[in-house]
Length: 301
Image (cartoon, rainbow, N blue to C red; front, side):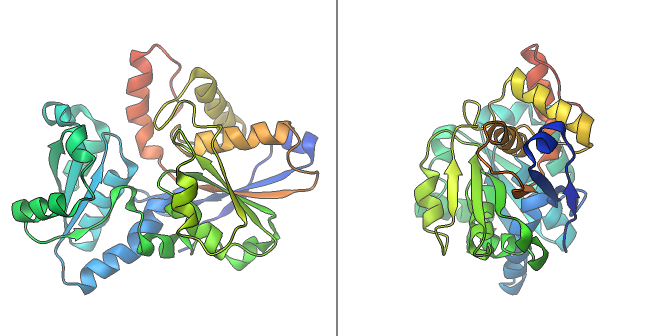
């Protein structure tokens, strides 16, 4: 399945003579959108080939990955278990739009403390989960593993060779690694980190086959799931002018950062840029509930 490329018309782009096209991966599937569709594709095939009946994975309160995995498992006939960060959610998850939808799609939850959650990759922790739930196919937090990268390598096609720059938001590094691996020799891949710090440089470097990439760490707005009034207003204005919705965790930060770089003439005139829309729009309702409590502007749905 391939997404469409949408040309962005914006005064800044015309002024700087930069072409920006957004690959609308968010439109791949109504409920398994963007990179989550790509990351789960080969993992679910592997689970079926291994005769597994249950998918187990990890995520937080508003995780796009949890929502996508729940629906994808339901669609493909698997049971699903979500190990959710934050034991305090056990008594309030019914009011959380992401978790409620995942539950309605058949996912069972186990809520654990943040300290226990940090042990999620340990062999002992996984063994305890198997004792509790029986055998399962494990998909890592965020979905990133070798099969996820294989799926993300299918985002770029031969028709995308004309772009000098390919941009993606970065969470766990799987999507941008897939893009780097299949990028054309004339292309530079820019990853816009949604997390604070540059530790992902080493993680990505282990997963890729070339050096034509750069991780940008100046546009995280304070860290994962952090935002600001400036970012919210930018996302709303972008949607008003282009019709393209962005999420505040990943793609909103990427496009904000990209526009900042264009303003600062980082790209020479006539540069063609392809930005990957990785989805994540299901989390907007949850973010709006957080913004409302902080008396900040809401994202336009």
